[in-house]
Length: 291
Image (cartoon, rainbow, N blue to C red; front, side):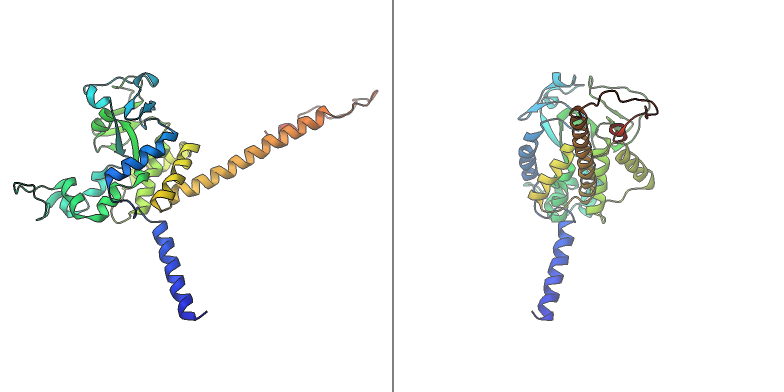
């Protein structure tokens, strides 16, 4: 095998690794992304913010005690939300604010913003279609959340029944059950698209805190694995944490096996009669050492 061939092979391999750990390069349609996610979430049809069950495109309000605020029609459907708002990275493209000469409707009127950016920039289309950044939510919650940033709000002024989400002064405070999920999504987007996603230090500190307080769960890791197979790139943030979680689960599983074996062993020991207990250790034994 020639040195030239080995060099070319190495370059190709490094390029593949770079791609695999970067952002979305496989899906450039938001509509297609939603169709894919509907199938993935058949395994766990639960809305992201309110934790309501849903079937097809209809949320079950009773399952989570949800009450609509104003828009009953929009609250009666499922929408797919950008956890990190699309405008956060969209404004980094000049077409978002300035438009483009090709952004004209049928009567010649120009437009800008998300619609123009989606038309002109392939990179933006792939970013907004990134499956890792999309979650199913009740439509009205999606609308009122808007593109507001995450944060902590004083008090518990809930406007959607038992749904644990507060929206006030352009800040969104989600339930603590998904704060880690949100933090890790932000971290992924920053890692995958460093040119377009840059957080200030205050937001970074909040993300770090939420990630630590709410570790990954089984569904989060399962979902990431499904997305990786379809989208092609590794979510390095979730991959590292899910690997650690698997190791902890293995330890926990082995712990239970050890306990069960110990109990089985103890139950099958033949007791010897007339053995004095004098001087024997009466503290906790080896089973407790594994707890």
